[in-house]
Image 1 (cartoon, rainbow, N blue to C red):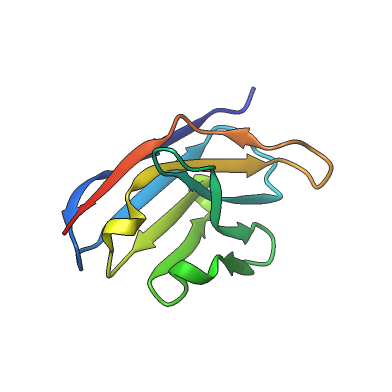
Image 2: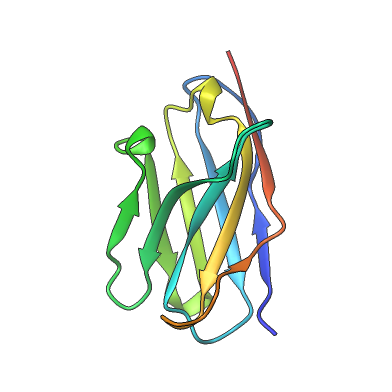
Length: 116
């Protein structure tokens, strides 16, 4: 069974940076990415990457600030977050879709808190 292990969250001041990592134990990866959920809000898409092509997608609010990347040899996806804002404060969840037709597999979440 595929498992995802996230790391890299923490507390940072506005304007700072953090890098999240998510390592997958499985071998089949179609797409990996990140969602986030702030208190009292619905979970929202942040970014993802197509594993075979490296094509990336971002929600508008993070474009130009966040970068999603992958290390195929390590089955790991990263989220580099720069110019962080207090509104980026949320629990960040990594996800993996093994194949196009498969449902997503979710990580345990890692908290990112941005102070003003």
